[in-house]
Every structure is written in C-alpha cells, then in structure tokens.
Image: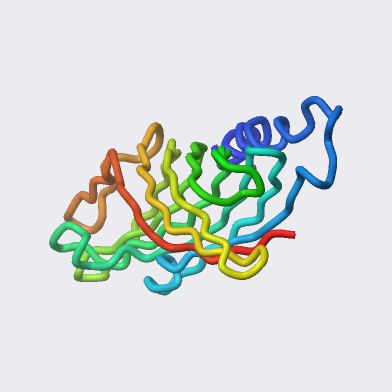
Length: 184
C-alpha cells in the first residue's frame, strides 16, 4: 500500500516539476521549507520541503501528531498518526505570498489504545486533502502561514478493533494551524 501511495505522490508531485522547461528560470523558481505548530503542540513533529515555480508550489510533507484525548471518542487514548503527503498549491500572487489554495494525497499510519491500555491497534488510511491559507512575509523570505484544511478518508481502515471496543476513523477531519517557513 505504501509503495502505491508513494508512486501516486511521485506522479502528482515530481512529474509536474519537469514538464515544459522553456521559460524555466531561477527568478521564478524557489525552494523552501516549513514547520507547523499544531503537531509540535500535541507532542509530534512536522516538516515540509517544497519547490515552487511561478504560481505553483509542490510540497513533500512528513508529520507525526497525537490526537488530544478530549477530541477522541470516550474510552480511547493515545491516538498517534504519522502522515506522509504530497500537495500541490496555487498562489494567486507571485513570489509565493498572499492567498493560496492546495490539494493532494496523504498516507496516515496510525495507532490507538483504549483507556485500559491493554493492546495497541494499528490502522492506515489514504486521505484526499484540500486547504488554503495566507502567506505573510514579515522579514525577507521568512513567513507565517495561517491555514485551514479538510481531510477526506478515501481508502483504508474504518473500524479498528481495540481490546473489547471498536475505534471508528472519521470520514472527514477539519484542521487549522500556523506554519513558519522560509524560502530561498
């Protein structure tokens, strides 16, 4: 499953960057990275690297987040998700600033426990994601990026048996956060 996911990401992510090469110049091409606050707040991590050309930005993302217990169904705890994603964004203004929208695919590798913590159940999902935000450059190419996204489960595990209970993965998950980024 992971091999299929990464192949699809390769097609979506890298193939677009090697399309037509006329007018390809360093003036219109940028490379950058971002860190996201939400996974760090929940005890995880987030890192993305990106290549942008003209109005398009192609991102590769790796993250780990722990769902806060107050969001989980009663009786469940320690929901940890490792995410791998490939996302394409479109900026309405040049130089990768201002409003943007984006879409892509994600692979979520999760694990969960009941409150009894007898066993850990593992699950995975393929997610279609769509989102948008605003890049505000406050010092040269250092920027803040508040954003919002919606994640739709399109494949993978739905009902996960854990001890004597069943954890049901959500069909749709909204998300909001703040990223800090830099580009060259």
